[in-house]
Image 1 (cartoon, rainbow, N blue to C red):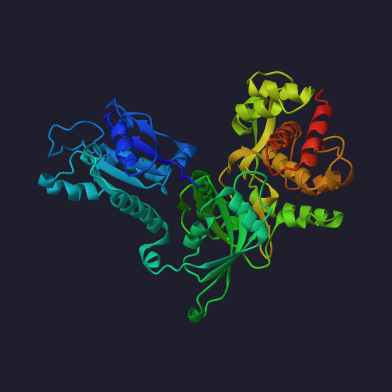
Image 2: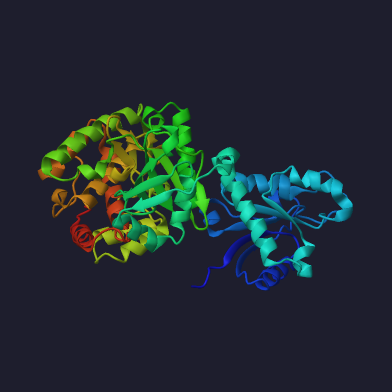
Length: 499
């Protein structure tokens, strides 16, 4: 089976370096996919544009020129010369701390030994003389030693050197469902979990329901070594091919903990950040015994209503002092809705209808069909991704995944939760979408249970209806949503009267 190309972020002012790196590595059978960023303007930070956000998921390794721009001497340097270490490295560490970063420099010379101590102080994960690519003297053993060492340093930064040195290689037992899910998405998931749980001798893995997009979620029972007398641990593990997204989740969770939010403090993280391998990453939360995902309670009418009461309790603890604010509906949607590209794509999945026309207007940033209306609505700290896979119910009911949490419209969370309920429980569905006040049947009873948690005025209710339509429309693009559910979404949205 052919290996995938090594994805390299290369930051260097010498344009010939791209061909030199590609040729040198191809000679040792390392295929590459290089994203080259060339510093050309010393007057701006980094001298060029660098990737940001989720773009960092595209790389396995960064090669950074230590100088960024030519120095006056080939042996000595002046203050401000080493901008690869003073600017680029700190930026990558903040945006993508899991990404190995190797410095390459024209100053790595035998006659400039004094420079090596300075270069080593920045905290790169490896160092290379630039000439090594041009001269073609690098061999496979040298390259693998360098890159493997760089990856280990990134892991040690999270796990710690002592535990890394004493790490075990736990046995992994998984359910057939877990194995099928992991095998279909990740080639090296077993190696990753052995790093995540390197402190124990065995883990037993079972899949949880999670959300309808993004990471896969599992429950892991971690069995300690026989001789240490410890008890079995229970952990919630999220695995994704987006280290950046999981990193954002960890940072947000720590922010909530520092802010004193009890439903975050009750869910400690196993590690201070993501544990990442090639094109895969994991984040781990402590999982209290006898805790279940809220989605597991959707089994009968009575449990749905009981679940609504449990949700009401935890949500009332989360939302603090909602305040009134005024805005144009289209501005709120622009801030909190899906991307225009996603909206445009799902609009084409719908038959001709008022909802399809509405989605097209939103995607085009036009203000029609009431989108230009000035409304008063409630804002406060919201979860931002409030689905049942992010609510854990047990002795202490808690939430996880605060990556999208921010000061935002209360109606966004209400619509997200209700859309998730409709996607998961067909017993709640009707031929029309529910409205916040006038719904009948079981969904009406559920909404009435949630009214104390979401105190919505008329402006909030308009936002609720629009975001409910947006959430269900976007669900048409989720592979995890069944054909039957997608059929119901299309039929229901096609009949929706927006007048």
